[in-house]
Image 1 (tube, rainbow, N blue to C red):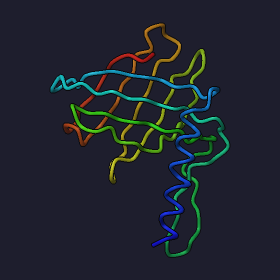
Image 2 (cartoon, one colour; image 1 turned 90 degrees about the horizontal axis):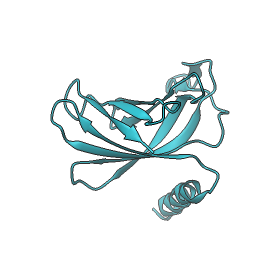
Image 3 (cartoon, rainbow, N blue to C red; image 1 turned 60 degrees about the horizontal axis):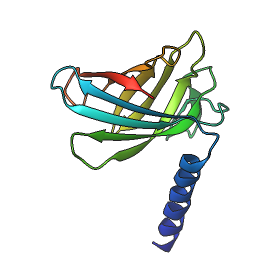
Length: 145
């Protein structure tokens, strides 16, 4: 049990370090569900490095299978729905934003992937979030700063 506490402390320290790093790019997004009008707030801390591949581990063979040939980065996303307490997830950025590309990424809520994209090259920085758990087939849209 003591070993688990140490690991948790290291994870919390890592998250705090990423959030407070002055060079990390952060997006604050506010939007509403197209179905219910419910407000959702996202805080996204972008990854500093894009030096990983997205892979799946086969538990029987312990072999890794690549699911993407592009480099990805892992950041943090904090999601606040309604008046609930914010939840934190790892946020995998699969496409870096540029003058021509949208930011694309996802996080896993339980066992459901939730996809986020942001038009970072537009002045108002519109975003879309596709969350099948919130309301099936629901799309959340809004803007980011």
